[in-house]
Amino acid sequence: MVAALNETLLDPARLPAVVADVQALIDAEVSDKSGASGLALKGGYGAVKKVGPSIVPDAVEGLLPSFVSRLEPFWQDYGTTGGAGFGDFLSARSDEVSNALLGVTDDKIEGTSKAAVKKVYSSLRPSAQKHVVAALPRLGALVQKHAG
Image (cartoon, rainbow, N blue to C red; front, side, top):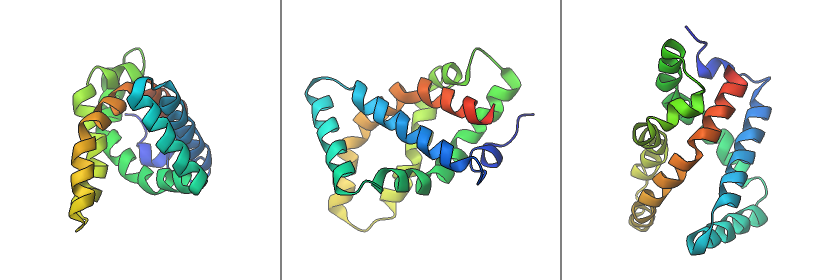
């Protein structure tokens, strides 16, 4: 049996490196986007980082335990079935994994009483799923690097 992700990825000694790698993953995924929607995403992301340089790392650190919890069943399955790499394993289950990960933000939005926020989120949710699916190979490699 493989070690639980919360024991490895959230280990206080390893956490700063994990947060830095997740932020680098987000930067790379945003950088890879193209077209009009990619331009808009890059502009919005850049603006957020300028307004508050700590917003992204703080959000990553705050949400990481929930994301790790959602990834745990997939990591345990990967540990018993093996395969080429965790990124490939996640990509082969892209709909299930992306919905599990987006469940973290779904839960956060569900808890808000602001109807406008819920409306905007629901309009962005389908494109968010495509972005999460695209990031699964990098995410799997990151997890495997720190937990493997």
